[in-house]
Length: 288
Length: 118
Image (cartoon, rainbow over all chains, first blue to last red):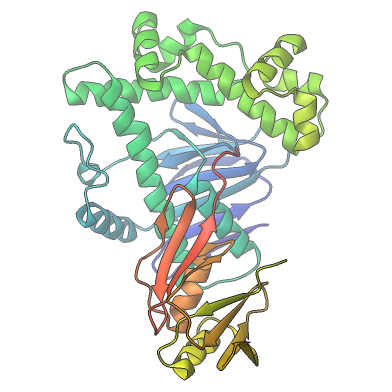
């Protein structure tokens, strides 16, 4: 369904069912970007980020971007942009209410003017809340108080994801200086978003290292420290997860799915899928 | 066998019944005796299989109302004038908010969430 809503407090919600190419534009406010089907590519400077239904992107106020799509499946995109005042009020009440987000190294979200603009996993509470919000709006309802309640909860969820994905992961890195930890994690997130966006390509470690501005050795060591997985393991898990999505939501034959997620050999895919999920892809599709 | 009636404690049965009907959307169905000399009012909501019964000598209860969308129903009840003792909070089970009825029975509005699916 296509609609765009601007609330009285200037929060905005857009839903589009077919994504057309959009030329360079500025995001005027902090926004969260989702897709519910297909995928959408965001070009931010030299970075090309693709979001799929299992991940979402955040854009800070003033970021210049353009969007495009290259998938055969019709794209269902959904985005929420928050008014600055709404965001500020939220931050104030959230950070003073209790110390939920005070990381153990003395970092505080309060001090953050900008968020790390990267791809985050779209799972857990934020997924439920955004689905409810979309469902509510799709049915043509429009109670601003309730919509703002949903948006408030999306921010709560986003802040806890941020805590989980940035502060806790940075904590795990073996560096003494807190700002070094944050900087290395920012670069590791560049590597991670590269994997998220190019998961179906042949990615060499050199490409990945170059993209994240780290040396290969440094990348391997710190990636494992932060995410408990090597880049290769991370990529395999991502491919398997997206294979699950494709198996569940499309009718592509298994061989096609194998190609789509970037595996070369169906039998190795089936073996990996089975060891990982204790079920064969075909049986998974039948039960899903 | 099935679970059909849940007795709730009432200090003032009339106030209790009007709270359930006006704010929570229950309808009084009938009056019934569940024990000798104890008359209860049976209240049903359209979408629930079990009925609340008010009156007699019930004890204070804790009632968990399951919902598909906790935020929506929280908002709906709040607009109807229910005073919540907690805002919706995240639990390992899902999202839940709590309120008390006029006699102090505890209600939990719970949305169970499946966190294992992708």
